[in-house]
Length: 238
Image (cartoon, rainbow, N blue to C red; front, top):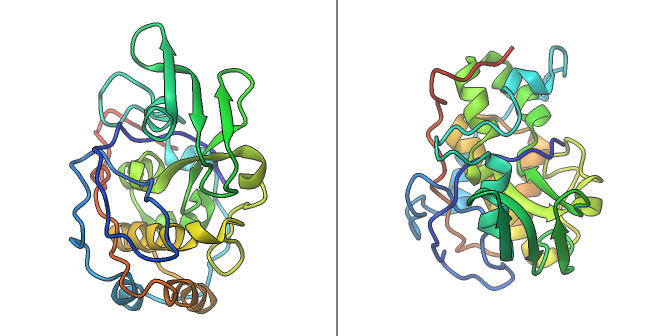
């Protein structure tokens, strides 16, 4: 699990409300999410390629570029962009970018209320689809610009409780789900959206786990938005 920032301030959008699913916090920056624009999530799950998990050989965070890359060119690093999007009562210093304080009310993964203070943070920025998982399910074969895009796409990034997040590792839906059951539909729907957008595959067990969660919210729509799947040419990765 990589706890790195990415993406730009998102446009505020309300997705279709479904019983058992909480407010979506994966809004992207390349325009608002379209309610229903991505089609039903269960349909999208069936469109994903199913293959085994490849070895982690060759993976490193550096293969996805420098952390905090400002791929949307708004002059703010991507961690601060996501903090500004997801926290309430945000305070900044040194202009408009550096977030020094905010409230995560509630944390989507645990349901707790968390206070963010820069330098002593209890808040992580999580990749909903972990970069290592992505590497083992297709990203190894991409060019660098696509890996950098994934690492900084606000569709795949969310502010969460650090202690809860650190138990996730590089787990997929078959091995880790948020303890907060009310958020699982949104969490899995976002993983499906990211994997479909970038062409990542899933394992048989992962697909079954996704469908089990989504059976509880069958009308759930596929989240959309986020950044382009290719980062600007000025960014480099190993």
